[in-house]
Amino acid sequence: MPARNHKQWSAKPDLELGEWVDSRIYSDEEIFEEELDKLWKKSWIALCHESELPEPYDFRTGIIAREPVIMVRGPDNKVRAFLNVCPHRGMTIERRPSGSFAPAQPSGNPKHMTCLFHAWQFDMKGNCVDIPRQKEGYQDRLDKSSQGLRALRCEVKYGGFVWVCLDDHTEFNVETWAAGAMDCIKDSLDAEPLELIHYHKAIIDCNYKLWHDTNSEFYHDYMHYHNRITGFNDDYFQRECSAYDNGHVNVGTFTVNYEEYDVAEDRGTLSFPNLPPDNWYMVDMFPGLNFNLRGSVVRMDLMTPLSANQVMIEFRGFGLKSDSPEDRAHRIQHHNSIWGPLGRNLHEDLIGVAGQGTTMTPKSEPRRILHGRHEGAYIHDEIGMRHFYESWGKKMDRLPSDPEQKYKAGKVMGPEMPPAKGLSTFAGKGA
Image 1 (cartoon, rainbow, N blue to C red):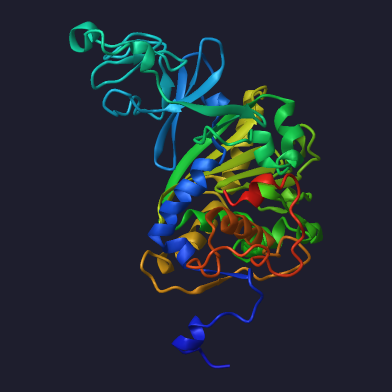
Image 2 (cartoon, rainbow, N blue to C red):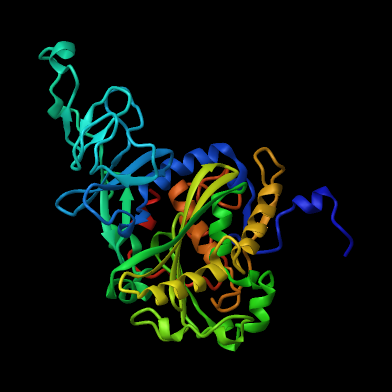
């Protein structure tokens, strides 16, 4: 068949509804703004790990749906989260990505969060503890006890990750939100305290969902040619994808042949607790969080959508807090050889999504993006995307294949899609 003209190029694919999406869901700015409200502000997001704020008065900052967030460890050792916003004039309280409030800052006292603008001070529970010249300025009209920070729902869960939700009214805690998707790695994450061993971030000109998509299918292993001809075996292609409520997906394990990699080594002696040597699980959490437990390291990707065509991705690697210096050095090498800034896989994945981003900029012509591969829910099946966009459609009340239409219950998925595991409450509400 010859190349297609515009009418043929724009026609609906000869596939079932749910086996493609309209590219406007990646490029339309109105849809992006709606996603921030309907998805990101209503989901539990793992913004960091407790090892990033190990001591009382330590803090870490982050962003959810443009809202600045600060997580602090109090003197009671509890991690709490607040909007990183002073209630006085809306100033950002802390601009550093991380640090400690234990020493005094130029603008305030030790053990307090202090707004640089007018020196209002807050304790680690978010209470306002000092307003300079309060009596002179407000007389008796304003009490500092009513001026605390905006508290956010916060849980430390699954190996010490710090989860935050902007929605006070969600009926879900982290465990019910996960709906069983994290169970395959839970025992390994919870066995011993984890510790951050690597961090870097990148800002990529593509929609955040494109990074999700490439993480939720392994058909793109053709891009990772070196891996394909060395570390992969028949079991690799028999890994099963499992769908869970709320849009989550995980991918089952197999034994990676690390000894076949050039200048690589077997990682079995540093395997995580409760994980068979050199095994690999992947968990993709809706709407933009990915965990890989691979042999000797845990990788966590956190997506922060910046615009319809730009995402900040934070890449973290974790080992065990109990590691010897020698073991820690090996884990760092294992992580960075695959997923570091110059690693074997990461830059290849980024090339893929950046290439998609150049064709799906805002105002670009709509086109069909195919998610129609069915291979028995194994890793070359595009079940991960179909399940994600089923949940996306419900929560957004838009049809992914035509986002100008409302979601049609039961019409998004293609054939052979197994029912999601776990709880069905959230997914069924279209929240």
